[in-house]
Length: 305
Image (spheres, rainbow, N blue to C red):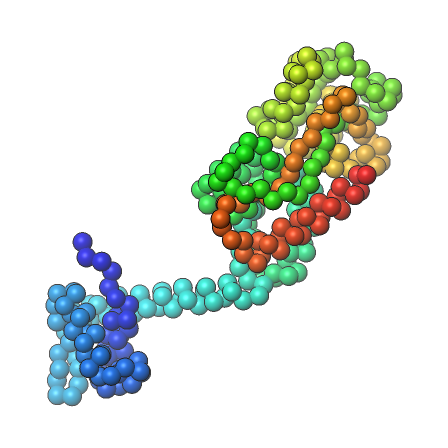
């Protein structure tokens, strides 16, 4: 199988077909007439057939030449479109931002960040793919996303982790719950509680389960929901307790419609950040997003102090 056709030869062929003159073609390409003639000859040799007939001083296409010209025009248009598209990407405010985020980040941190981002990059295409930590890594592997905002867990040498903030997991209970009334968690009561979580297969649940195993506490009853808002509403109604970071329920904690209590004497902390392929240079849009995310994370943690 032969390789692709030479784009410079195709360009000379297209201009020659339009002008019908080697002299005019050479003038438009800023080449000598012999250079154009050599280019066309090399193209005919590569293809294996004659493309042109000379009629006096004019040049006419053969049937093979007419066939090639149709394809050549498409090829050159696509090449020009590719060049124009790349040039547009280099202009201020253009480009794309392909993100993967956990549902909680999408709800709390992402909206203010993207609002400011759009002010700097008004014509940038933004794509957000929600998922848990494993799904975000899979999105990076399949090159469906370029940045993944999520939790740091098992180190992966393929990716760089840009830290955003750390949080601490706590019990979330109704103000009418006995723990809230007492202002402390009764350790012996933990196995009796209905634990309401977002996803049982998530990284967060795994570290929570491991935490209590080390404390010799068994989490017996687990209710799994697909919405953090639904979890908070069920906790408000006294249907169970949840384990979350305070920033997830900051409005409810301020209004005292929910109460946060420590898990135990040991703290259970998580690290949040942005994953991307190691060695890949971030675009201006991506660097801006990282900076805005760090600022938003600082403001978020400040409101919880």
